[in-house]
Image (cartoon, rainbow, N blue to C red; front, side):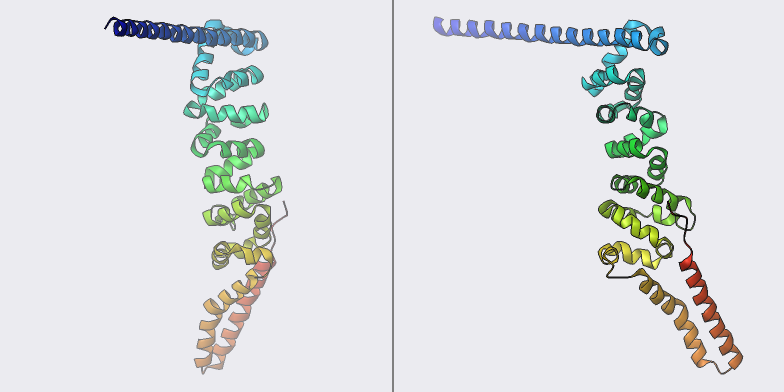
Length: 285
């Protein structure tokens, strides 16, 4: 009986010691983190006196501790490297501060200007790290495309070169082709095939913006990209069935030669208009 009591006492005593060790260790760890934040605050005041000197060490330390708590210890490393502007970005990133930390760690000062401002941080919160990378690489062009077309635009931009992104932006700015830049299916194709698809879309933008050709292309882009199928054939078929056939039927039934001549003239004018529209080309990027 006494042996069991002694064992029980030893276990309770050992548990109490373990709790004390954990508590003291946690306290020491917290003190260590507070000390690191304070040292960083003092360093920032020395290096960026014009930006943060008025805050004082205590206030700046509290801000640094809050950011480290929400975004992890790597946040302090990023702030040490990039300064108070990085601190403000992380504070304004809210729940997505950890994403901003990863972007700042990867791109350094290049990410500072790209992520500053409420509009861009809003896009970052909505569409994640990929949107942030697009904003860093392509700036205002990416911002406009993502704000207009959302996640599909992010996926497309990720796969495009600088020229490809500029071309996509030019499509969005031109009223006759803006529908292409906002079409989620087309952007999905660009996200899969990258510049290869963007080059094809750019060369055939007027035909694709016409309607039926776009549906055929996004449904099965491979034959078009490989050159085994031509969009012009689809457009001719569409023109023949939607315009030529009804006129031809009327023409066959008509007994008045004046009406026949007018009908033939109308068909020629329509064909000329279609050829003219095909020949138009926007300036190259």
